[in-house]
Length: 408
Image (cartoon, rainbow, N blue to C red):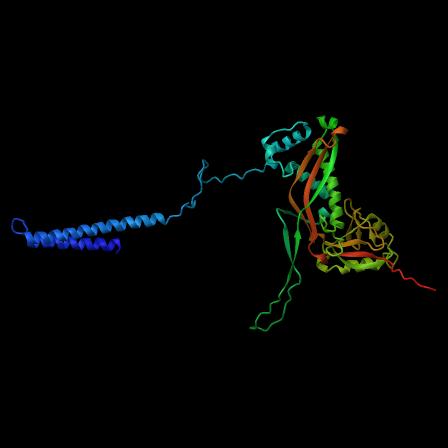
């Protein structure tokens, strides 16, 4: 029985006992022995109901206590000394602090280990120092200046394996009568993955030069590292085969699509026309040629049917030359126009994705070249690259001449 019901029952019992006593007492308020015994039984019944009420209340309290979780969840914001209307400040990255940059450069110049809270927080997994953000931005800027592909491709910062879903086929529209059911296509999707391949470069500095305070260590490292990394990246972004390095745009199966083949490096005007119009119209809006300087030398001699050179030299400073109105970029890492080689790429290279993992790092090697009085500095980065949409880049390839043996 519930507590409320017991309380009501006790109230009724008390009213009955009170009424019984009023009706059976004499003028002096005294009950007979028999009525007294009946009244005492009624009081005893009231006492038993009271005990039952107390017991039910204790049971309810215990059940409520046992129903609480062992660890109550935190439902309120932890209090601090900040005003209620003030948002907590975001913690600063240690690599973004000027003090961290100063400590890193000091540590690289010193021959003795330096203990610093900033350096402890900025040590990477291989024991080197994470590159200060200001220096990292400068390195990336130099990479884009040195590396043709860095300027044209799209760079993505990743924290793990990055997957890109691509529609393998396009939806189609269908005409329907008013009130008829819609017709849905069933597109399928492909997926490419950007991983992280380690790229490292080492430069050596003499101990005397390092000890010279007038020597701009920061500028020297940025210049040397950026140049070396840019060259290695560009080679991989163009020719990489995916073996611990990115897939390049000239890769046979994961690069651009071979649209034109010509024999024995005899590139004709029609071949360039065919290459341009093999690229679908949406991609031609931002399309460019990429080729080797030696291929440029061949193309500069190509004439149209009227005897006019198809090459259009730039008339503005810093503007690239053009072929058929499309800019031409050159790279020493493009394949040469030789038999069997893909040598010219034409397309929209924003569909090439460059994945950068984490932050670049410096490492100091003091013992390796100590006998030569030099100290080596190693820069490391983790990067990958792949063409997300093959049809966005078309390739001109030099076809190898067929060897047919004839017997007299």
